[in-house]
Image (cartoon, rainbow, N blue to C red; front, top):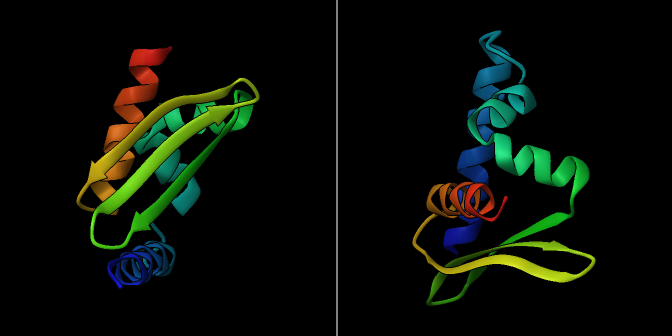
Amino acid sequence: MACQAALQEFRQELRRAQSTKMAAPLDEIERTYPAIAQWVRGSGWIEIGEQEGFGFVVRALDYGGMVFEDANCRSLAEALASLERGLNDAG
């Protein structure tokens, strides 16, 4: 599955970052995706997954419901970038 491969690649990147004494992986993620980090810390939660045969879907939700959704992403990286843009536009 593409989702498993993307997750494995992401884990390998985190391990490389940790083993080379780069910035802490979570700090790097927060610097790369500040709107996502802010959303998860104080506004709601996110969902990211693969729809078999269709690609990735990404959502931002709060207790009022869905704030953002993109179901047309071809990769995990594209899904995260789309979510970052969507949260910036929504906020």
